[in-house]
Structure formats: structure tokens, C-alpha cells
Image (cartoon, rainbow, N blue to C red; front, side, top):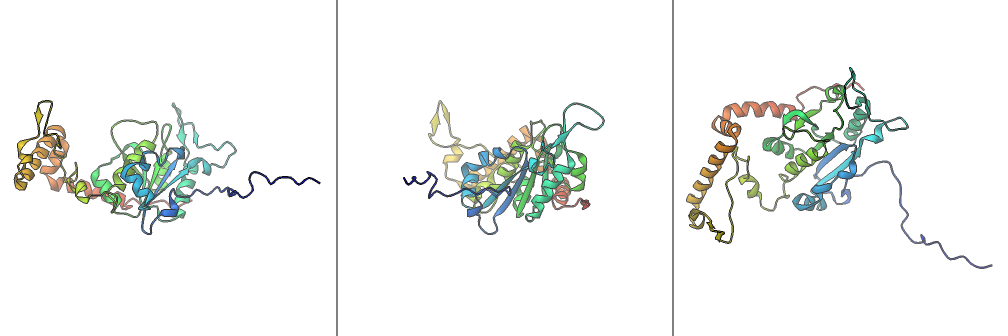
Length: 286
């Protein structure tokens, strides 16, 4: 009897199928690393740009971990339905409260989810102060809406914090979630090579950043400002502060008013901090 040759798969690692998602780069995650969870209908979009540059390097080094959960996993009908027509009529579809609630509860059951943000054009404005506060926490969960939006009941029942990255509308919350994560992760210890860079950036002191120059000294008839070549550190610091104030006053009157009236800005910041700390009570009814 002729002996058959072994199958081509012999000696190869057999794949194991699991329905439980694993955090990206989990095997390299360090103790105390920042945990980011994204609830989305398109988990394949992540990590996307977050896998490049300083955030990508930090992800590979285990300074933070990312888990993208597919919301469709939590639909219980055979079609994995996640949306339905809006109550009262109207165009588009609305994401279902029951499906999304199961996804949020699953994420919470895996550990402390931190603040749960819902990316929405009607939310409070995301800014550098919010990024700084989020970076101080151990974790963050982001819910990416689609279609016409999310059933208000799950926003209320799970205490979602609605956050907007600007006065415009995107097709979904994924790009906004990436922006929030990028701004937050880069502020985590060890992510930026030079910590002083973050201290001098736009918004760090309530002002836009001053202009930057580098070699060559002259280019197309334009020269680097003489003060920056003087080696006089006090004069350079004064020039940079004056330029930052000038640009802020010209381009961002809202920031300039807050810079000139820090007490008023502090009151607004306190209101935001209360929300991020979970000031809104959650309905624990399941």
C-alpha cells in the first residue's frame, strides 16, 4: 500500500478562532499602560494613522493598548441589525439603544473603561485642556456614531459624554475618535521624546504657538528673524511670547479673551471636568 505524503499543513501552527476581541499589541502592553477602547461598526479602520509616528511607536512599545470592538457583534437578530428608522419619521436611520448598550456594558465588564465619550457634532468642544485631563486617566472608551445618530436613551442611561471635534459633520465618529486618541496619547508619559515640546505647543498655555524657523538662514529672499540668531535667550523668549499673543489675538479672539480673563475660563473648565469625572449620574437599570 502506497503511503500518502503528509498534508501541506503538517507542522504549521493551527489557527484558533475566537469571538472575543483582543486589544491590539496586547502581548507587549506594559503594566499601567493607557487602555483605549473604541466601539465602532468599522473596527478595520483602527489603528489606522495611530499605528504611525510617535503614537504607533508607543503602541508597539506597550505604552498604550487599543481595542476596537465591532458593535454588530452585540446585535441578536440573524441580520445583525444595529439601526432602525427614527421615531416620529424623518430621513436616515438611528443606532439602536439596546445593541449599543450591550457593547458598552461588555467594554465596561473587561475593566475600568474610564470616561465614555460619544463623538457627536452637538457635543462639547474637544480641546487641549480636555486632552490633558483624559491623558491623566488610566483608560478611555469612545463610541463612534453613524447614520443620523444614536438613540438618546442609551446616551442618558449610560452617561455618555458627547464630544465634538469641530463645527462640521463627518460620515461617522471614527475619524473624530482617532483625533481624540492622537491628542490624548501623545501627552502620556514617555510618548513624546521631548516633554518640553508639549509645554510650548499651541493651546498649552492658552495661546497659539509662535512661528518656527530653521536652516537655511535665508530662503527665497526671506530671512530668519534676527532675534532668533542672537543667542540671547531672554530676548528670544520675549519675542516668542509676543508673537504667540499677537497671533492669538488676531486669529482666535475666543482664546484671547480666555487668556485675558482666566477666572472666567476656569469656571468653564470646572464644568467640563465635572462631566469627565462622571458628574452625570448613570441609570444602572439594565
